[in-house]
Image 1 (cartoon, rainbow, N blue to C red):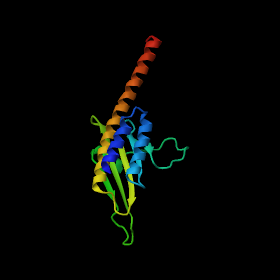
Image 2: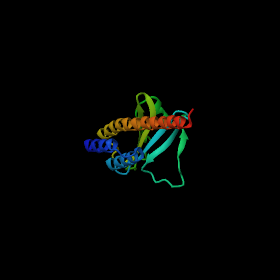
Image 3: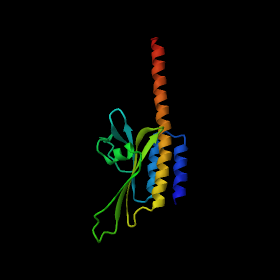
Image 4: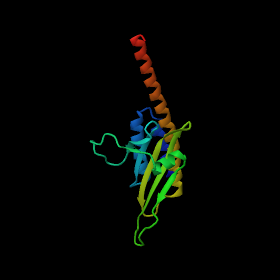
Length: 171
């Protein structure tokens, strides 16, 4: 039920756990909400204009420490730059196909700053109901807020560490 997903997503994102844990749990909750789906959070680096896979329900080899790719010309970039959800659906399904593939991309931004994209891939017999897509969109808004706060806190902590190092050095 969409309201149950939003309630659970809110609980996860408001918890005091580190952001990596919250992202992992959010992706897992998304997978439970849309059984059989794959959920990923891609964060955007404004300096390099790359996306970095921050969390996913995909199985990834431990050797793959960091998955990154250029944002240029990607559908993820389209969702983020235009700050709007993008939905990709199969167009040319064979007549006997019982399953339908869909990909939903939700932009993550906070205070006008692009943060990344929530990507949800789903394969089902009936497609994803509009109410569920709307719940995912609302969940992505909450995710944006949580990621934005965490990144601002991380940035402030880094500045404080630099200031402390400068003070310690007596500069």
